Image (cartoon, rainbow, N blue to C red; front, side, top):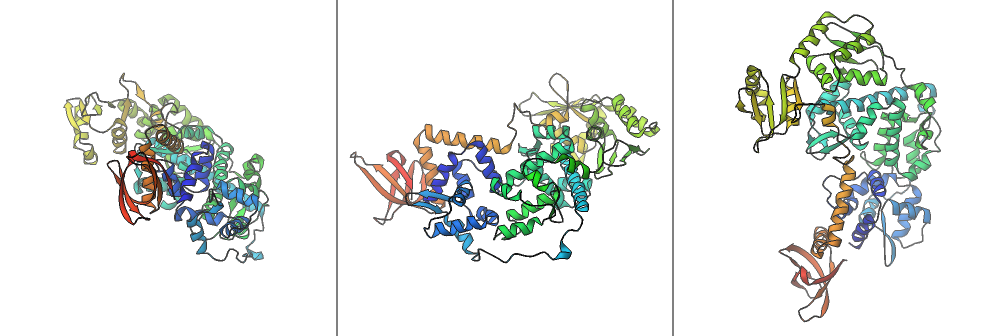
Length: 580
């Protein structure tokens, strides 16, 4: 238990950047962690150690073995273990966390035969390998862009701890032409790369998402590699720089990290999956730009030469389908996505024009004239007559249905329209039954849910609703979905770290009871003993070795192991306490 207390103290002393790096390297989720005690418990868990053992090098494993036998170990290996917080120091010296030793004891062989790749398995054509890696990287960056537009145009609720519901996963999978599992993976990567975050029970875009949309492919690639490097950790990045093009990444890990294949969910599997999805490897073999990318120098020449060539040509058909003849240039793609719904995103993508998509374009600041000009330049042909009819229909209907904040205490949203029949249709729509609309007037409905929820529900049901503020001004869905930097922190992790700091501050500068309570709760959960210094009514101070069982109403209850009796101690009498 003294190790857990030492871990809490060590975590408190880390800078914000060091905490972010530790969380990335240790594959720790911060959801539900309220303070440094909770974080320490999660890091000192079997699940956390199971993830990290696969990325421990032979020298680190030797150091752990030496420390467990009280032997002198290599200082460099010890320092690397310190950074990962896999060891702690007490009065007797450096020690390994017991749970980590228990995990390692299940894998007695700290070395294993190196798997040798047969000649016919080795890549014979680096040019082909690079070309395939470039295409995969481009398609994956397209997938992340699609995630951003999904969150802009749809309300994506949080399911479980930061996950995404099956309907949202299926919608993304359909647009990307991928499996549900692959679509879910891109939602996860978007969150880990800080393009999205969870707030108020829904997935929302961060300021980084707006930056992403403005970046060219090489800039987007640099952002992803920076996340990947943080996930690897500085030590592994340094060693990976030695890899030559065409080497097998998994084999290199197995050669240098004896326990690299401990489990399917190990860090190795996460590393190789990311590298494969974002063109750092192809079929497991490193691309020509792998080492330079890990070193922090994206070789834009090599990368661009293997990315699909961008163009601006499109074909617009009378049914509203808009087909790109190849990968679109960034500015053209972002503009098209503002007023066209994606149906199939790939090297040659298909979009569709409909009333909702064109309405979205107008909401984000485009005019019908600008949309028409964009299509005319991209297709270089006169627009089909049905498309012109569609433009006129949207112009006529735009702004007819407005969603705004309600001033009534029991209702949070107003839905207004001069079309009374339209409001009656909305009230009776079975798809919107959960919103429980109240008819406040002939031209107004009321709802207890917040405006953004009502807005997205109406849009998903096919109604051309728009959001307006108190003055009646149009609210862009892009502005409402991207978290403003001055209103919210740009990262969930940053928010969590701030909360942990605040909790620590309150326990050190506020009443001592709160700090004592957290330590006692920690001891109870871990069935550990505590040493309590108590001031008796006589003024005398006495130390008790207690195994706490409960804490309530300002009193600590537990068993005095020395006296073999149950004790109840008021927290107000405790002078100091330490975890044994």
